[in-house]
Structures are given as structure tokens and as C-alpha cells.
Image 1 (cartoon, rainbow, N blue to C red):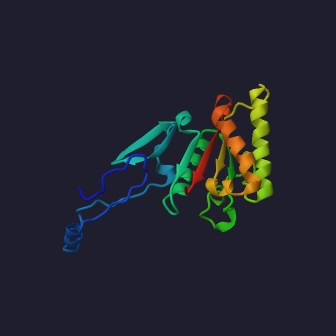
Image 2: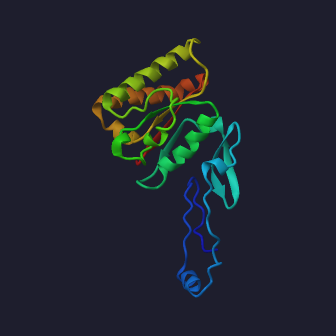
Length: 202
């Protein structure tokens, strides 16, 4: 009863205490709220063909793999966008999907999305973070979509992950090729199993 009501489309779990509950807890009522234990990835109940997004109360919540992509993930700084994407992308990798990451903040530290997948050596293309590499990755994806549309490409699910999406759109060199590719993915390439996740603060 002390939790905030759930918010639609939010994956954030943030327990709040009222002043009475805090006082009661100081007085020894420590059993008012159960301890929140976060399981490791290896303990999570993953399912083939489905993606675990989180929990509602104690029940895991899934979405079918194909209905989740293509997707825009938005939120302000430190609200869990990268953590959510690590959870989701780890499951796609377990299900033999190919992933390529564009992350302009790759060198900002170990918490960046791209750094989080340095352990995985079989990304479809190396993580792109400098402008030239970003443009090369966009061109690579565009060529792969064309090959698949002509029936000569791979049919394994392929996901382009674009972090700092709105920031990239403010870069005059990247704006046009990025916009064209995202439009092509959203309008044409789902039928050839090419998808995208865009992550943005705005």
C-alpha cells in the first residue's frame, strides 16, 4: 500500500515510503516492506521466442520477440535506458539474433551501452562511436537491407541499436543517412528481418 501506483509503459520499480511508514520502520517495524532482491541474468526465467521485460508484483512479464522491434526507448539521464537495453539485447543474443551497436558515448565509461557488450565478440559489426565508423555502419546496414530485399541476403534477424539517437540527429553529417536508414527499416525491412532500437533522452 506504500508503493506509488504503477505507471503505464514504465519499467521503473521505485518503492516509496510515507512518513508514517518511515517512523514505524525506525520503531522496529522493519517487516513493513519486503526486501527487494534483484536476480542475476543467469537466474531470470528467459523463454525462447519471447523477451522478458520485467516484473509486475512477483510475476514475470514477457512480450513476443517480433512485436518488440522496431522500438524507440526514451527517458532522461539515469532512468535505466541502457540497463533495460542490456536486458533486452542479451536475450536477443541468446536467441541467435545478430546485433550491431552505434554508441557515440562509447568512451564515456563502462556504463555506456556499447561498453556493456565488449564481452561479446560476435557482434554483426564492431561498435561504432566515431563519426566515420557510424557512417560506415549505416552504409553497411543499407547494403544488407538491399541484398535481403532482392532475395540474396541472410535471413537471420538483424538489429541495429542506436544510442543517443536525438543527439546524432543534431549532427549535420549523420542526420540524413541516419534518418533515411531508420525510415527504410521502419517501412521496408521488417519483412526481411532487419530491425532497430533507438534510444534517446528526448
